[in-house]
Amino acid sequence: MSNASTSAAGSERISMLKVLNPFHIWALGVGIVLVGEFMGWNFSVAKGGAYGSLIACWVIGLLYTCVAMIDSEVTSTVAAAGGQYTQAKHIIGPLMAFNVGLYLVMAYTMLEAADALVVGDLMKSGAAALGYMDLETKPFVVFTIAFLAWLNYRGVFMTLTVNFVITLIAFLAILVLFIGVDPTHSGTILKHKELLTDLPYGWIGVIASFQFGMWYYLGIEGTCQAAEEVRSAGRSIPLGTMGGMMTLLVAATLTWFICTGLMPWQYLGQAITPLYDAATLVGNTNLQILLFVATIFSAVASANGCINDASRAWFSLGRDRYMPSFFGAIHPKYRTPYRAIIFLIPIAVSFAFTGLLDQVITFSILSGLLGYTFMSINMVKFRKMWPLGSIKRGYVHPLHPFPAITLFALCVSVYFATFLGYGSTLLSIMGFYIVASIWFTIRRYKFVKRGDQFTMPWPRPEGY
Image (tube, rainbow, N blue to C red; front, side, top):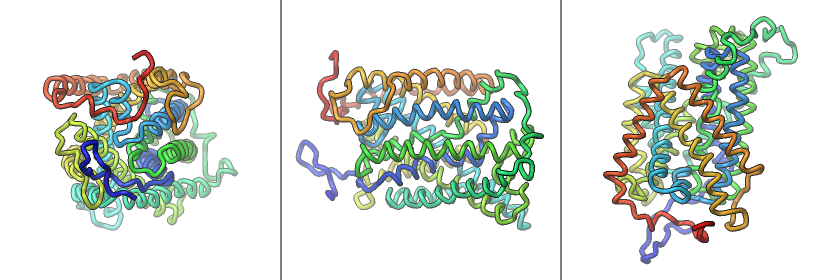
């Protein structure tokens, strides 16, 4: 394996290692998302009731299935770090690429901060159960982010191998809990007949639940960030992403089934750790311990994947001069974007220290949603500029353009759902990205070398 790539000028440039396989891609995608099954998704129950949450689970599952199919095609063709950012710079242009890169960095950094908050709260709760009542959460927040950043600094193979192990344990814990509630004998442990009610707020509540329905799957698109480090993008990205999406659909449905059969929707809609609460209600100490450990593992795996993805997006912005080129460096020994990893640590810690979990989560959701909206437009333009047969694709998603149209329509519905509950937050975030776009146009665009953007050996696009 070559340790460096050679530039056009003949000098050697350090590149990231191609060491990942489909299992690592699965671990990256599912690892980021699975924490949403352990907490967060249940806020959709408060908006739309138990049935409303199930509808949100499947409707938003369709949204993310479209995301996974579109990402698998474009990323297996544009195999470079930065994922959707790299797609944007090849297909649409610099301003869109800058915004998409910023969406990615903010979505993953906010999610990382939320994960670290969860780890701190869980450790405080565990300590309280053992009699240590005055434990502070902030040291656990700092230690979690710092340790995972160190892991990412040392190499992507070790990082995602660890993620695979702890994510698999967390997923298996959901399956064990499902078996433990004896689903074949309704009424013995699960009380769906008594607990399930009609839609408490009607269909407007169902729509409002879409915002937190995203928590079942938010982050699966992060598999694209590893495109430059897989052995075969055409094989690993589609297999890891689509396999991850199927895993999440199963985990989300089982989670809903277990929790709604054990807790009334009024309590479930505001629970902090619903799966752990479910294990506690079963009355099995071993299940309770397993779910406590699995909840921590899910949060750690999510934060670990977020550091990986946010740093790759920030690194790509620096490498292409959208941000200072200082951040576009790769460690000569570990082959990781080490400066980007280090730079984002204090940002994640500062957001975690706010303690505003719902606001941090909303910022992450809306940043991701803006990226998904771009993807629907990007896919249509990609197929128009380079039709099937004009370039080699690692994967071709079926039924085009219906997935792109469906994705766009569902994104619009989630914007409306978010406006119902967090209208001021939605407007402030949109304002933030508008100001950032103006800053880029005035201050950074002059540093971008347009000729260096297009790294793919493709023919001239149709119509150009």
